[in-house]
Length: 259
Image (cartoon, rainbow, N blue to C red):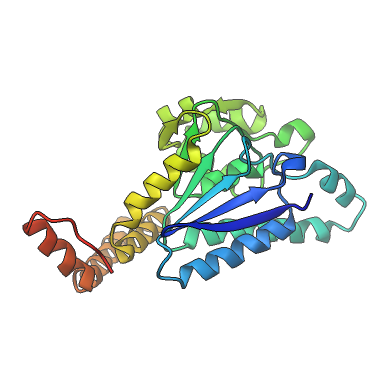
């Protein structure tokens, strides 16, 4: 069976499905390029308000294909470096994409699969979902931005447990820590993520883009710089037609319909 990243639509939401069931939805370079291409197309499509990333069946993603990695040990190091660069291109595309991206996680999210979920803006997970950075268990270190995301979301000692020890962590615990936003019953992650995407998609898309940029820049800015950035976004959004729509609807106690 061919490993692929499938792109479908549910209303105003693009659904990207990691499909490699023979290898528990393991990733590969062909998916990385497809992910970047899909997000590029969605960015320029005003009909797309949100993106949901999920895995086929009851597995989100098993991470890298170990058979491929073993084969790459016999090839020049540049081969694996280029593959990781393509993965990182996809991660950066998710992080900078100006619309909400929601991970819908069923079952295991391992290695780079965990990293991809962390790159998303929001995570919905089935209560029986399990997250693991299994790299150290096979003599490897993290990629896909997993160490970056975890170090910003969790206490250092817990991050070291997950990365050094390769310990599993459940969806319930990550929900308590604020990493997983919503829990659901097994088999309901995609439906729950689509519901959430529909709620976000009903809000002003220019505001969603501003919020994503502001949150993404917060770690890099000092307070003075960030206050200036907030000012600029606020003024720009106030003079956007959607602010007129939103304020008028609120005052009239009606639901807004944004452009």
